[in-house]
Amino acid sequence: MLIQSIIVGLIIAAAVVYGVVTLSRKRSAFSTKPGCGSDCGCNSGGKKLPS
Image (cartoon, one colour):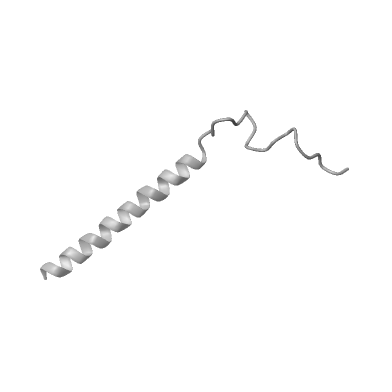
């Protein structure tokens, strides 16, 4: 019975760590990057759309 509790605890701990890592990556994806202007990462001075 003790080994089953240890295994379940490890699975739950791994799930919590996975959730924290996933949420931190999603949060950092929405933060502004250094060197970016007010645009959303697109370089407005680059290619122009064909008309």
